[in-house]
Length: 384
Image (cartoon, rainbow, N blue to C red; front, side):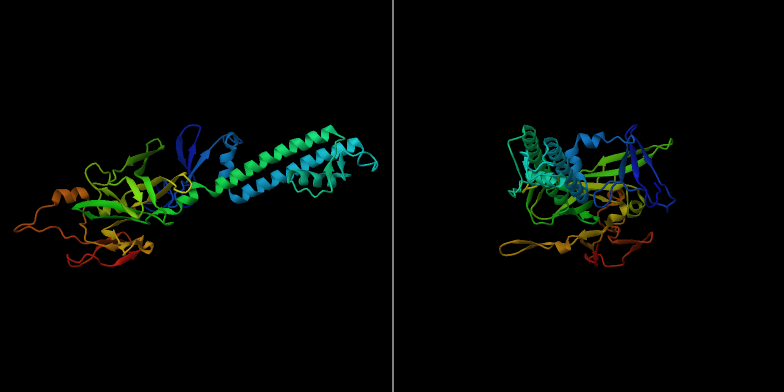
């Protein structure tokens, strides 16, 4: 798909058809991403104009998901408007009882002679300030009923506000930002098999003892009628269940049945797909379910590299150097697809030689092959 900047994917909830808007002419090989690097999806939902029922039916989730400044504004207005409403009620009660005109009259509320005094009495009652200057008397049963209603409403409003703030502070999205994947994926040889791998680590240093990793290859297919159909293919992972006490490397073998089995380094760079990886786990501190996700494009997959070792053994501890989390080094890897490598791999004998295992570097659409001895494993470091 060829798109330009500012394009968004829109799903019309009325007919499940996927459309693209604001299309601009782009270069060859550019397309609209299915998911951004930070895990957000460039998807907006087109609904009936003015239909806010999905947000009002689940108002708690709506308030948890809105921005902090909008939430604080809404909560501030809810308190101020409630003070004004009940202050108006108290002023009407005082006005009907004659407290505003006759200072010698037996008042319903002490020292409430106007709207300002009624507003201050409302605020002091709801906030339980209790200055002792204004107070309720037993002369008006209506005023007593209004005070009772305001007290109950105040408890309910405080419960909602505190619950939403706590839920927002303990949001799973914030915890997910402390568990992350490496900036790139790599392809190299493991036990004679070409493998695609990437790293997963917990930057807070907590020990997550149970979690599930999932990887999907996402492609879009445009039909002759112009509709776009999203294609999803699950990747078989060697270690799906993860104990994240230390950073782990997630491995997918490029074997028959893998959607990447027939792609070599050059075909990989020209392919149009996205590798969506996710890690779902339960937080050990809150017990909440969290998910960290990331998206790799073909440009994020490095052929012929491996991750730098970041785990060291000390006398009493295992030391993890997260400064090396995204650092890779070049290693000799055949410039072949896994399918070609399996087909052309032959035992070394008289008159036979294996294809050289040399790293490739792709720059500006061209693939360069490093001319290095076969025995040299590490060529240079690449910082992502």
